[in-house]
Image 1: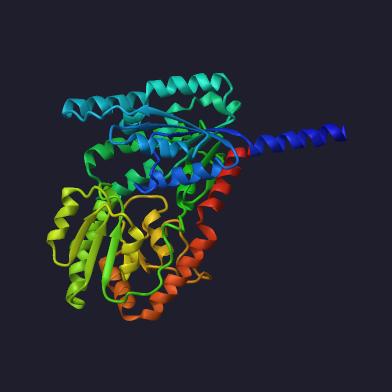
Image 2 (image 1 turned 120 degrees about the horizontal axis):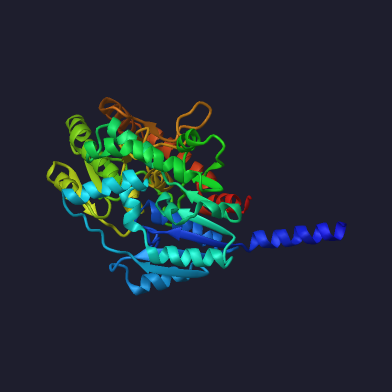
Amino acid sequence: MRCVKICWEFLGGQRKNNMKILMLSSTFPYPPTKGGTQVRTFNLLRHLNQKHHVTLVTQKDNEIPEETIVALRGWVTELKVFPREPVVEGGILNKIERFGKFWQQGTPPNVLHSYSVEIQKWIDKAVVAGKFEAITCEHSVNEIYVRPQWKRHLQTVVNIHSSVYRTCQNQLATATSENKLRDRLYLPLLLRYEKRFCQKFSQIVVTTEEDRQQILTFNSQSKVAVIPNGVDLVTFPYRNTDPGGRQLIFFGGMDYIANIDAACFFSREILPILQAKYPGTTLTVVGSNPTPKVLALAELPGIRVTGRVTSIAEYLHRATICVVPMRTGFGIKNKTLEAMAAGTPVVGSDRGLEGIEVDRDGVPLRALRANRVDEYVEAISRLFADAELRATLSHNARAMIEREYSWPNLAKRYEQVIIDR
């Protein structure tokens, strides 16, 4: 019996150290510099693939060159790439039809947009053949491919980057919704949708404790783990010197509603007050795909809009302060972690600092918090005037990033979730 037990434990250990994992990502996760979804997905899969057999199923559009696909193939055991169908917006009748489908079928239009029948056939066939021991959905939009009955014999994990219901609710509450009427109609449907799909999974992963509490309101018995985003410390090295001055930076994907709102809010409501108090104060808005609304900010005094840059770290190193004035958008923010890694002092909102311990009693001060206009002006003024405070935030934040937000350590925690049946 002792021999049988030892052999069983050995085989079990071997299985856990060489699992066959299927990762689903409708977002093509390479290069890992184009957005938060790409960064999180790529860094988790590349570390998992060091110990496990990882098959990645993803989609591409015509803008992704063949050499990028070849490069991604080198980071996984097997790569299956399917074409993405172009999204056809249509007019009012099309929108009414999409809402009707959502109300009847329970799946949001953005999830249906990325859904591929060919991918579903491939996954169904692979599961029936017993090809995988675990399936992970990298972003909740991929949940559509997972059948509820699979969790009886597979480990099924959904990696929720942020609660869609909670995000919609917040956008309505903060008047940052792009379409208030649509979102009011969608809100109860999103609640129903998120409750339903969470039931399908063995394990749920979120990036912040706030999102964990939200998911537990759907089902208090769910297994929900908090695994935040991380930072590539090579891509975001710690800066050598404090540049001083009065240069502010805000960065992120500038076609994302939450970033657009933050950039416009800060540029139009806060920056003019700072410039009146501190002449020469500038703001650099860095990030890919700036919308016309963002590009128009460059017409205001002291604002530069760069578009996509080769190294965000270089811009962070030249900035006095990084502002993260998010008013909506849930989940942990890569931009906040990356600024902290680079050593740039951060002034951020509750949304911008979500999931990161920066000013709780008993922890070193790592950023300054602001939500109202006067709070931003006061916090930024303090940092402009106090080089020692800037150095304190810079040092404390970088130390926290090195200790708690390195991708190898976070990937180990993700691995444990996957193998923990």
